[in-house]
Length: 107
Image (cartoon, rainbow, N blue to C red; front, side, top):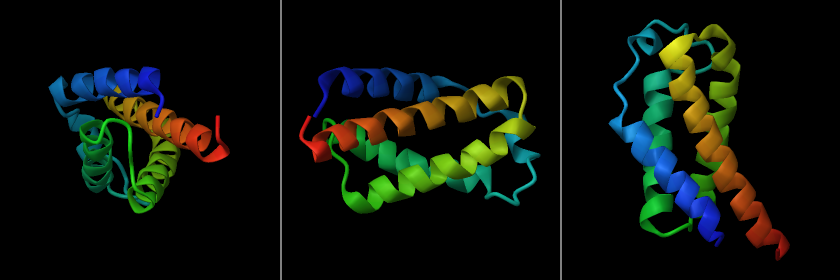
């Protein structure tokens, strides 16, 4: 477990939880997934990661990364607060993914 990653994820997650839901996200065309559902799925995974102090099981890890890929496809259609909301979730998923790769590779 990488303590620096856990701290950064925890800070970003607290910021995310304190931010209002961008109305723009209700308007997004959902051909790449429903942002509300994606957000909820990611919330469960990220909360678990934070509560377990940097540990995430393989199933949640796969869900988190799949959701982040969906958000990457949605991101170009967003502006301002919606884009900031989605970028933050993608960043958290990237941090967790890199942290897990380091553990798997033995770094």
